[in-house]
Length: 178
Image (cartoon, rainbow, N blue to C red; front, side, top):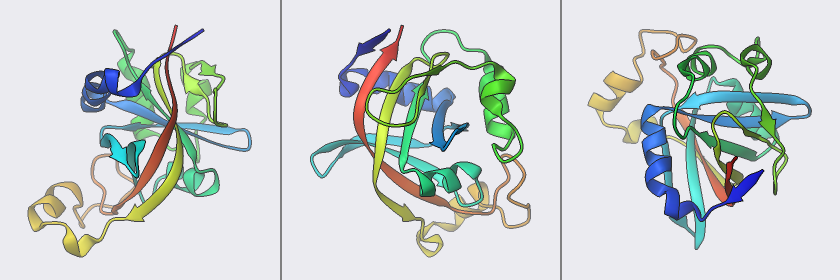
């Protein structure tokens, strides 16, 4: 069962969820993948409610988003098994079926092809309307040093030298899975 919500009534829950970690879920054919994110923006652009998800160039989720430009943002409410964020943030969907490994419950979507995840019940269904790769020349040196260290390969969690693409997702549906 889903309880429809007005996304901006839950803006603090969305933003606080980003601080502790949330999931970005993608789907291509039958391949469902969730990736832990802690960077994201909620706002309005082109008179539409938007969630901007930032995905590194090397991530499997980026490849998924290039093929199917729909995604869900799955935000925890209440208690959460931290192992979910750990596994989804350190293992790649190229090699691991994280949904199966964690025993997560996909929730059928309302408006797009990508399901929500019942264990992280606040769900934003998004359809990409624009994307843009970061311009590394425009990023200040101190940020590059902290978030884009060039001395460590991008395959290591938390030590990534590759930059992000910002995926602007129009929020086409928002609900809490009950």
